[in-house]
Image (cartoon, rainbow, N blue to C red; front, side, top):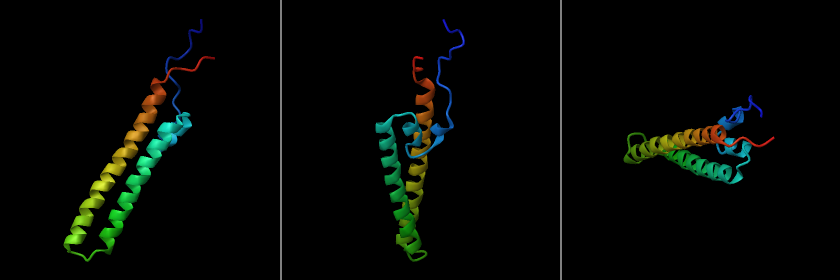
Length: 100
């Protein structure tokens, strides 16, 4: 009987990588690909909205609309990044320890 065995996995700083990096470091390729794809799509939306904002005439309705889209897409992007990191950390800490 190993009395010093931990019931939780040791924390790894790799779990803090965005865009599925934490999931990839845990060997969970499907989840890593899913998070990377989601975050890449949200990043593309945010870049498109920011580009529309900066190319629109100041004070125009198009610029106001693009500003709103940039704020919304940015908020969703950063929320998804935080959720992906949180999911990796929780999955890593709650994972069953591998038998020795």
